[in-house]
Length: 182
Image (cartoon, rainbow, N blue to C red; front, top):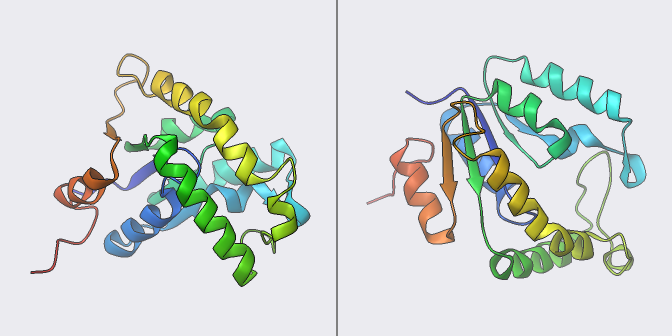
């Protein structure tokens, strides 16, 4: 039976949103992107109490697949989840993805959350995702390694995926992605 409440965590550019969208499309679970709850206009985070309320309200639903990394809300998220999928990919995989994704988004002027767009000028700023993601990569991995450790996960099943080649086959075997076409 397909879990009805799935949380998907991993470092920046590990494929969380893409994978969550694919799982949602296959299973029919509503896709909950935590970035959409967190960001306001002009890349301004919403107040912490508003984010917490938005998250709590969204997680009250019976079914969802949530993706995002907001460690301050990890307990809230994991308490409602039936399974956690941890994309534990190394920086050497995530960094080229991040650069490619950011350049594509800036070039296309793709709207992201609350009307925000990545721009080439912002990609060069000190608070750019291109600096932030790599700078926090190892800290992020340590956080989730501690939080999702079997002794700390409070019985929550954790699917730990640490290589890109294993992600799709493993999730297909769990029925979360469509079977490979013949």
